[in-house]
Image (cartoon, rainbow, N blue to C red; front, side):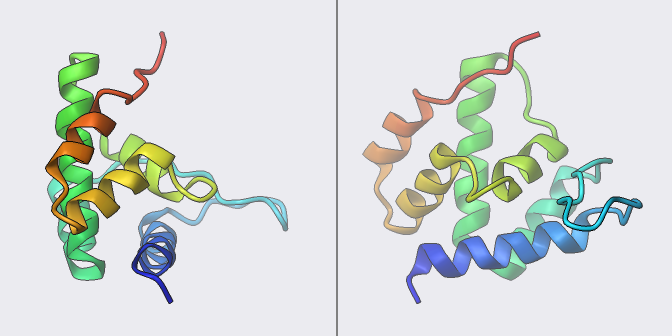
Length: 116
């Protein structure tokens, strides 16, 4: 199993473990709600996959630089958990794992800022 596949699976499990269990219809994906301290979430990422934390920190720094505000924990959790994960975030995890700082910088410049 590739590094990225293992990381995605572990992050999906982490998302399930950190998501409150609201009542929802069978077949619906649970909504990612609520917030926990970012350091707690990053600590969990370190336990699951250290490269995931490194990629998340790079993503958060690039988000702050591009968007002018800090990324909320719930936004980071969604970026990891929805679908196959945010493509930019997942690529940043891979780039940090490979110690490819040029790719991390290039990817950081492509982060989309939420509107509204």
